[in-house]
Image (cartoon, rainbow, N blue to C red):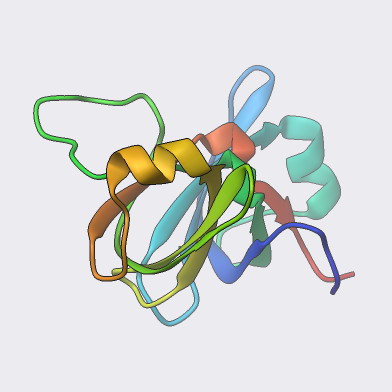
Length: 143
């Protein structure tokens, strides 16, 4: 599968919670135990045939990832709060690509402004937390 999303993870559906319009899908990524929550429409759940145990692909655009270096004393509404370590920082003219190794072993790409990367002082080896809204996780299944 080819996509423009920098982050794509294989996993299995752990749970499906139905809502009035949107459903919450919890996915466990392959071989790592990392869990990602997605919120998608009930119609999409039905169209994709999502149920517990179903194999899925989770797509997350790198520009949808927010990086934090310090979460102490602050709570966030983002359902996905993934701890990791910076692998690399590549600075461009405007944006920086930050590669993060999640605690489960997956690599995650984040695109943040060059100024933010500078303000955070990001460098390889730094501990970070990636915030990803559940509504920014796109789920797919093999046809």
